[in-house]
Image (cartoon, rainbow, N blue to C red; front, side, top):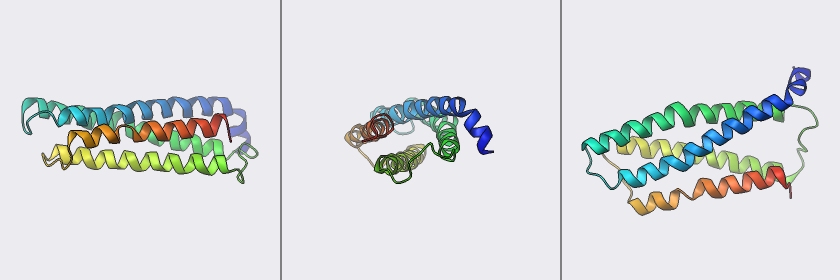
Length: 148
């Protein structure tokens, strides 16, 4: 299996990057939808439209992209010699990826709140939350490219 992974390393890396980009795109957009959802009356036609958009974005784009990101990343991490397991950049990156997954879970919780017309947060909360994936993505990319 290791030989297979090493042979197709570039393909797996490409899949990993594409999945990560799709996941990040959704992670950037979903909290923005929540900002706009806060501006409409619960139960209105607009609110119902946001509920559909949020559900589809989370379930049909973000979650599959996250799963593929983890699977392809795990496959890459299992290639001997590809990662220096003693390097701090690797662990920093991994912590940020798990932080991003936690943010993904929080987005799911917030979506359920909107779906049940019981959102607990103000528009400003989602505007601030929208910055979290940006910061995590910046650290992840720096850890992978620069490897400080």
